[in-house]
Image (cartoon, rainbow, N blue to C red; front, side, top):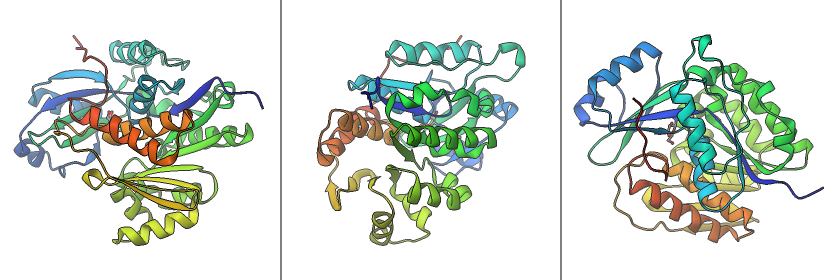
Length: 325
Ligand code: 26A
């Protein structure tokens, strides 16, 4: 087997983030739980946007954020995801390619009338983010968009659990996992969100137990996966199922279970401005560390460093903000 061209291939929903600072009252008024993610349609997206002061518009999408941060940390990265050839899609594409990331996905023609996905990220003064996502073009991501040569040429294929929410993207996800295994490469999965775990628990169990080499989850997602309330019990269960599990616990640090050992890695204290993308960045740091053959504790420290960098600033990317006109 020849050495792969990319250390990491991320596959996910290609989304543009619309960031707005708001008070808790606005989030309560929208009927959303603080820190949650709600799927919305295009008219609802417009309605929410008309009620807030948009601070900036940046590239987003969980897996794309991971791709960008990992590239910034020196990994060779590719990304697959679906945008439309509209203004937001052009911004997303430029942002990704400016980081030196290989992004071969064909955009949907603008004439199709399905816009690029957007995620309205409402951030409270405490730095907590609540998200409203319109998936748009992402729902058109299909197995044909998963290029076998790109998967075969990446040491690790990192898949968003979020992809599981739409039937065609789910097929694309499973196709990518199969291609990676066929090429003897590694598969990483992030559980993405408790709402995803609730909806796809059985499928995620099967993936974790049989097809995934590296599992990323936060504490709430792990508890939801095993339907338990005790973290230690969830750790016992995940240890029995996966080769390598990386669990983030916010200010309580991270737990890495791999090579038959458990490592508790404390977090570094930072001033929180906006937690959007903290988990994405942690995974990026960890994966960038693996690509450099670091040990698991060093990888987790790199994850902490990357997450720390992202939460001390507004938005989920280390790039300069850009504005949509
Ligand atoms: C399927 N859904 C809802 C999503 C997302 C998503 N990424 C993929 N699929 N909803 C929000 N995001 C992204 O999560 C990042 C923070 O972790 C946002 O675009 C944001 O950048």
